[in-house]
Image (tube, rainbow, N blue to C red; front, side, top):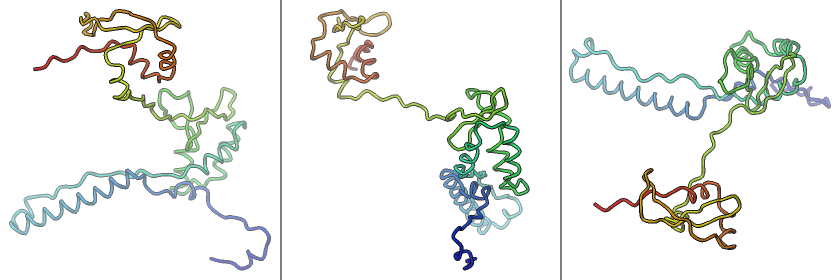
Length: 239
């Protein structure tokens, strides 16, 4: 409710509850879509059941309507406030920080318990590739070192690296030729027309790359250089 007395002062103090600010994010986008789809499936199952019962009333007792697949709740928690709060205590003894967590957050509510137990406190288990005792709040990783001090570990979750693909234009330009790398020396390798034991084309080394070709080689990406050094597969004979 608007209070005109607050506007008469120079300072306006916010009274937001941090635990409510953190968790008021609703569902994850994909979880929301799955839940909507489950509602559609459930309504379709009910319509099909009612239609069958209308045609044959005896099915009302002999048949039990199917149930749609259950979709659990995946909360999209807004953890930036909790992350900033915990980051401001890095470098302090964890025993003191843990005491302030329980003093700051109200664990008597369901949302408060969720913030404290699921996010701010170290979890009971963690992925194997994480440091021992590490946990993540939003984008930052935290850990308690051997002396009991709260420290940063950096981001623990990283996106899988997507290797760039070699373009069709590069494959067409290179053809069946390949490049042999001997230290700083580069040579062309031409196919001999024979197939080796590994099922790849056999090659013979010819002339060295020119200055222009060496500049072309230096401009290539790692994936293109790897392709240029890998023997090509023999062409598939026509059927």
